[in-house]
Every structure is written in structure tokens, then in C-alpha cells.
Length: 162
Image (cartoon, rainbow, N blue to C red):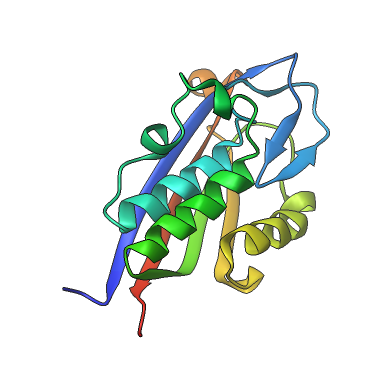
């Protein structure tokens, strides 16, 4: 068994005018927010799926089904904490995260420091071990037409030592 495991996560949500935009745990001023059963933080959801995948566990839909009223409006930082805990229970510790947010607007750079601080606290790793980048979809598809946002994430886990 390898000492290291890599997981890949992806999430996408439609934009809607009746929600607050939350990305990486940060409330970002914007005319639209992401639609979903939870707080719809696609960046945090992609990170959670990457962690769960690296640990060989099912995706967040298994642990936090959108059919369960207990998770209506759940803060995605709780999802991240539970994902790290689930990986820990399988004998792994999180080493680092690299993520890319795909959105036409708003600008993400002004919020990166706050995102890393919140994610660091939720994930239990230093902020410098969290990479977050943003890109556009060059006007292509629902993301490019400002109807959705998506995120990709990669997590590296290491077998915990006793």
C-alpha cells in the first residue's frame, strides 16, 4: 500500500439571484449566488470530494445527501471537517490541496487570502499548503454565460504514522 494517495474532486452549481455567493467559506459580494441544498460552495465541495476520493471513500452525496433535510443549508466548512475526519479514520492525514475555480465573475483574487484562512481552519493544514486559482471559461457554455460556477480540486493524503 502506498504511503501517498491522490484524489480528484469536481463540483458545479447554477447561479441564482436569490442566494448569497459563498466560495471557500467566504461570503463574496455578487449579484448572484450558487443554487444548492447546502450553502452550495462549489469550491469547498470539490475539495471535500478530492479528500474523500483519495481516502477511497464515496463522494459527498453519499455522506450529505441532498434528499436529507438535516443538510439543508449546511455550511460547507462542516462538510470539509467531516471529510478530513473520515480520511483520518481510514488512517490518512491531509498533506495539501490544489484547486481551480471556474467562473466568469466576480474577481476571486481579492478573496484568496480569506479563503485560504477559512479553508486552513476547516482542513487542519497550513494556508500555504492550499493552492487556489481562478480562471474563466472564455464565454463558453453555462459557466461562460454566467449561469454557473464550477471547481476542480486535487488532494494529497499521506498514510498517518502511529
